[in-house]
Length: 207
Image 1 (cartoon, one colour):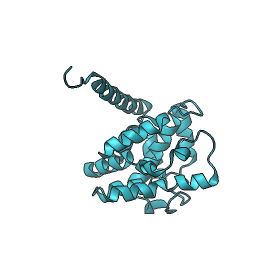
Image 2: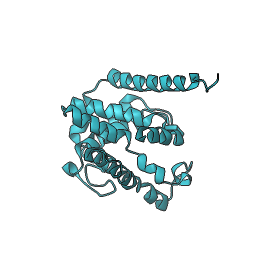
Image 3: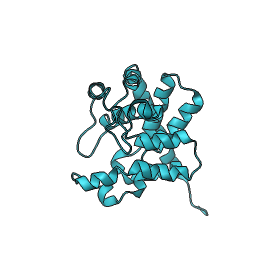
Image 4: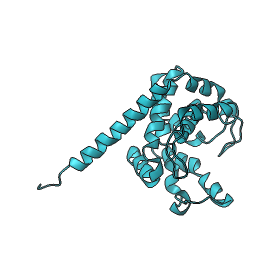
């Protein structure tokens, strides 16, 4: 059910289609790369998949606004980690899943939101997610710009190491080759295509 909600959210924010699935796969890959236990990797992956679930509580007039947000609107958007955490607490999911959702907009230097956590106060899964989320945003098409090359993403992520991003997570990210990221992106896209084809070929009763 939660995965269905994520798919609905990605469809609602049509410019980010398949973003949640990609960042979930990226996050699990990087979490495994740093040596985390398989059970932790799985929970972190669910947190990454569900990271923006709280946006279902944000008005379309703000979430889909084509122009620059006002200060008041930005403050409303900043509520989505808390909204998402409240939703997931009712779903009886592992605490780590909820923590990733709650912390995914925190910055390593304490300038993130919603709680202004810093360093190790931020759950490790969220610190890993933060890096790959930025990577996916930079290397994917957006309404206001085309996807940027991987080299641009690497430079930007390195520039924010120690401020927005955990240096350890950045180092792990830099150890991954471009073809490895490409393979994950391709696999998630192929999975989406297979799902869409299955939906199209399903015949209604009596046909």
